[in-house]
Length: 307
Image (cartoon, rainbow, N blue to C red; front, side, top):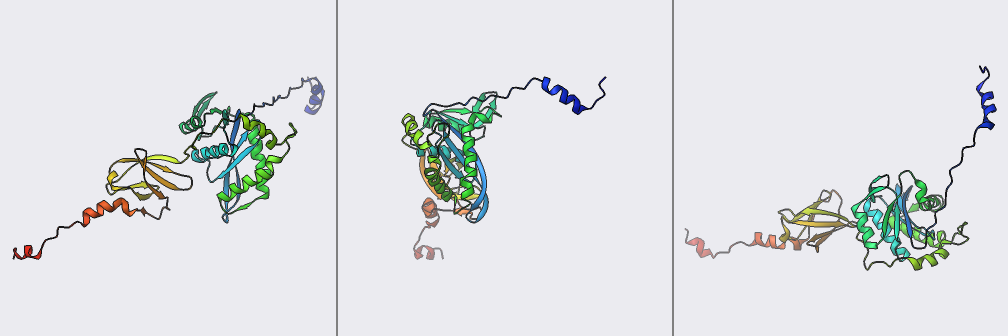
């Protein structure tokens, strides 16, 4: 048998081994107005004097590579949908398909291509008339265009800008930087800028609906006997005529609480902190106070008759 060392054996057989073929990647280019790719990234920066994590949604047009970014405190469904609404408004139109990762805001289950989409995401798709698509699990290259943009933002915008007054300020700075820098960078494979390619793609975008999709949080509450509903540990007044009835609520991303009965707006409040407790609009309870304050008035002679 062979009595030599392993190094000599490897040296001997290396030239005789078949070369393992490398995986080939075919670049997939989409037609103008056909696809938008969506993804989230996150960085740590300073907002309002506090070090915190900033989540940012990147929505990239497949043909032109033009993108829009929306910074938010969370990556939940409401902020995901809001990022797409703002992107469509920014581009002035909508694409035919939107490709997303398997985040719960969009995809509940993806089993070998059998995708169950989040009902809220399907409502968004119906509102803007696009076809939702989900990446195959563990196939990051499926949405390579948008993932490159996430990296591009981290290595450029968030290196240059590290301090912001608020999330509104982050988004203002992002839009300005995109217009001044990102839209004007040359794409090596095309020898054109995203701005130049978008001039062609814009003609192929679908028109926007008359109204934006409502991205606010939705839920049902029951009005208590004292004419309040509870939201987040606090109580908010409702017109007394709705005591004991169910109402629907919507909470916008800027913390406005809207209360509806049979799809009619009946009350609105600003969300308060957990320690605030009660929020009351006097007009809501005026009939109740009127009932309490109504006391029968009798002349003094009526009491004298009892003596």
